[in-house]
Every structure is written in structure tokens, then in C-alpha cells.
Image (cartoon, rainbow, N blue to C red; front, side, top):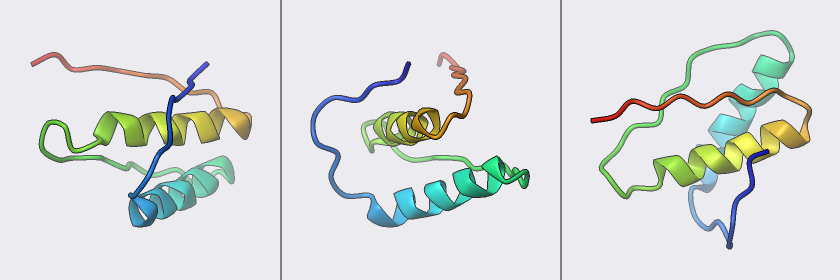
Length: 68
């Protein structure tokens, strides 16, 4: 289970776009979404927030990592 800690602030625009993509995927219309940015920009935390929402909605959440 994905859980997040603390308060998640900012990224309203990005989260709105990601939530729209999640809703489309859950309706059977998937697509690829990528989060890119400098180290420490919040990509992992944003992904964790979206994953937590997806799990709440009943979606299976899988994680992959790419070491440097």
C-alpha cells in the first residue's frame, strides 16, 4: 500500500493533469505520462500522491526504478 506522510502542497496544476490521466485510464483509455525534472523537484512525492489516490480508487499500483 502506498502511503504518504505530511502535507502535500503545491503542484495543483500537475496533480489535476495526473488525476485526469488516472480517470481516463480507469475508464479504459490509458496513455503514457512522464514526470521529469531536476533532483529534488518533487517527482517521487507527486508520484506517491497519485499512487495513493489510485489505490483508493481501486487501481493496482506498480513501481519501477531506474538506478543511475
